[in-house]
Length: 432
Image (cartoon, rainbow, N blue to C red; front, side, top):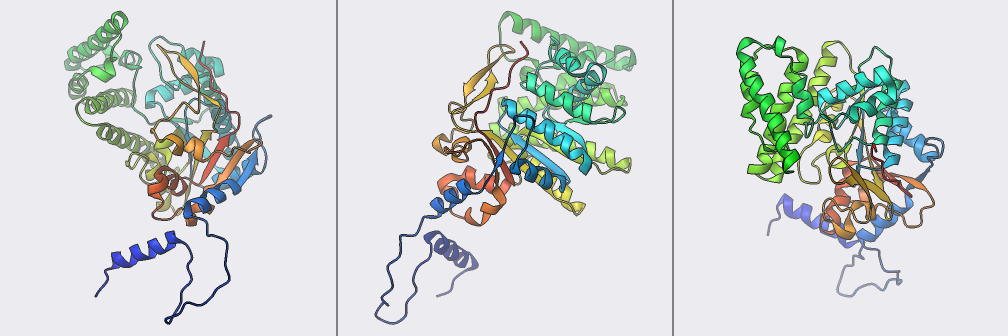
């Protein structure tokens, strides 16, 4: 009888999952001293997860052993990725403080989950009028994003304020979802080639008609219902646009394409296309910096499904997978941090119109994981305050086979280096 390499690996993995066992020879087993029952692999992992924590306070800004450890580990990395559960006030505060603390370690760019031109114009507004400039931009009737929260505005203002005035610090890498009228209005008719003016007029009319129809009878907005061809026609007729025009047209075209795939294909297909757009957007910014002879350290902040190392929670190699390879090419490393509310606290989710509502973190279950969702498994019921977990120390215990018990937890331990769990999380607040 022969055993393949797979058989050997499988047998070894099963023996690990079964735990230690007494090996005997001969016909009669040796009498051994009775021992306490061995813990299951799941129990050992959960015990280590609850034990391996550092305290973090947020009263007058972040402090404590957990904070000191985060700053050191992030400072040694080329990229720091903050993967968040959206709508938690403390996460925006932590992110602002961390970027400021990392400036001395060479961090000079903040990449955020907004489209490129929107991020650029938010920075321009902040340079001009600080926090109020961002709040005014958020309040425009032609712009809107699920990230338009008051704490997010403070976070962006702090990031811009931490950078020298002549330095462009904010990078947007996502698609656009609601601000088509704003972006289209930024397209200058006078600078458009003659042959591009008719398709540009059709694009403006289509966007405005969709908005007017939505006001009368709410339904899918323009970027979720129109054909990408309405933008492609403008791009074809405008062969040599300036940088901003090119970015706007490509963003509109790809946003429509992503949502077209969502309507005609599967959720996986649209998520994959969105991930490729985000990776391409970040790659373009990095190429521009390299062309100028610069290799900046970059902090990224987005939903935790996008920031994880390796395949994400829906099996797509998202933005977080890309940064590992980019850092490795330069002989550097990256630092991934997942930030979540604990159980029994609140976070902001989308409400009617442009509003937000506070919900209990116990009610929010994005991936329908039930009691195995990360906000419950990573929480510590006996915690006296906020906590930081070094997930790297748990990797030897998150072994093959435990995916059947809790695949999200195992993936998180290997895909993130640290977790921040808020005790008493507060929902972010809307603009009104």
